[in-house]
Each structure stands twice: as C-alpha cells, then as structure tokens.
Image (cartoon, rainbow, N blue to C red; front, top):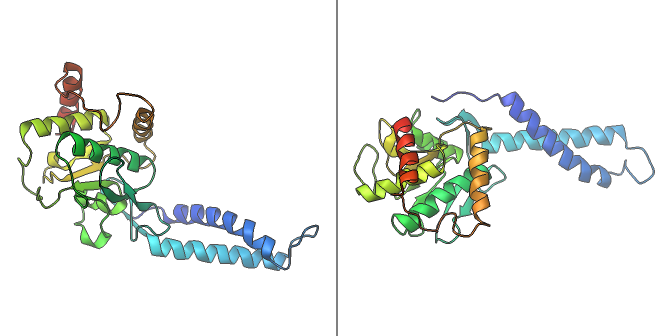
Length: 250
C-alpha cells in the first residue's frame, strides 16, 4: 500500500547536502568574498537561496513522494542525479536500472547467479526501473519504480502464471534467496505470482541488507566465492537453509 514519505525530512537532507556543496564553490567565486576578507552577508544569503532552489527543483524532478510496496521511494527519472542508475552485471552482457549502493550489490548478485546457473541471459533480458505510472499500485511490481527490483525475462514469465521453471531451476532460485538471507523475495511466492520478479524485501536502513551486501562484496576478494562460481544447491547445509527460508516466505 502506497503512502506519502516524510517530505520535510527528505527536503532538509537535500538542502543540507546541496547547500554545503554549492556554498563551498559559489562563495569563493562571489565578489563579496575574497581571501583575507569577511564574506558579504547579502552574497551569502543569495548563495543559500540558490542552493535551496536547486534542491527543490531536484526534488520535484526526481522524487515522487510515494513509497513502493517495500517502503522505498519511487523515483520519476533515472540516470539523472537521483538514486537510480543503469548499472552492469559484471561478467555478463547485462545492465539494468537499479538503486545504487547496497541494493545494486544484492540484485546484481541475483541476476548474475541466474545467468550462470539457470540460463544464460542476453542483453535486455534483465529489466529494472519502470516509471511509477506504469506499475499497478499495491503490488510488488511497484518496487521496480523505486529501483529495488528486477525482472528477468518478463515476457517469458507472465504475471499470474506459475510453473515457469523446471524443478532444478527453482531449486537454484531457492538457493540464491537463501544466500541473500531473506532480504530478497521472489515474485513467484506472492499471492499473485510474478515469477520474473525479484525484489528487496526489507525497508530502507535495514541492517540485514547492509550485512548481506557486505558479504557479497567480500566474495569479490575470496577465491571460490560469489556469483559465477558454481555451487551445489543439493548440499545438505544449503538445502536446509533454502527450505527454512522458503517456509518463511511462501
């Protein structure tokens, strides 16, 4: 269910960051400010006003003020000074539009494991962000608009249909979810299934997402770990973890 974000908090943070970055450069270029002199109060006020106007313009252009189903804010644009950018999945031909940072780390890991262990994907077969007006309210697909979800071959696994994966493929999906420790949910487990959809299932600031992202990043420097290194999902320890999580999520 969508809800308005605390816009005052968002605006204050945007103003603080933008004003700090702007003032540092603008004041030095203002005639009222020179080495060895005090800044001109009126020039300072003008610089602050310009920073505030830029912050408000950015907020209006980028932020929607509406939460996706998992609690993250939907954004109206991508690759344009917001939080959502087109990012590659290293070692694959894929890129997709995803929220930068921890969300990116985790969802790129999911897509990469799918590519190597379920079926090789072609460019364009991983789809991220969608415009807020193109997703249906109240459904998990709204998470696409906040950059916290990805669809893999959406045309091959239509919403509402089950059974799109062979048993062994679904076994690997369960193993991927268990490796992500429950911070990722598969749309195939939703009451209205969408088997192409994988999305972050924790709210912003949840320490579990931070922990999993750090674990995945650490595998980059550990031989025999991470996406692209084939694992056996039938190992008893892995199966136990996958079954336990499936019991919680289904």
